[in-house]
Length: 101
Image (tube, rainbow, N blue to C red):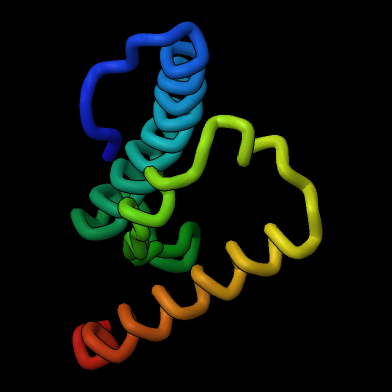
């Protein structure tokens, strides 16, 4: 979740990019929810399609702190840092929610 309204051209382009990505993701999530509803209603046999459980693990503060140019940063050290941060967030999420999944 980004805070504030984008002002500069770079901020506006970044927001457009985020919205475009999110719209594709949301379309996929709606399709999954639709199929899940059909399975739960018995309209589709459980053997025909698989019910999916999806959880969101977020690091909004860390992601918001990154600049627009970080999207194009393919430096191995940077990618490793993102990976490590994601692992820590996932470990914390699992520690808190594992009993519920």
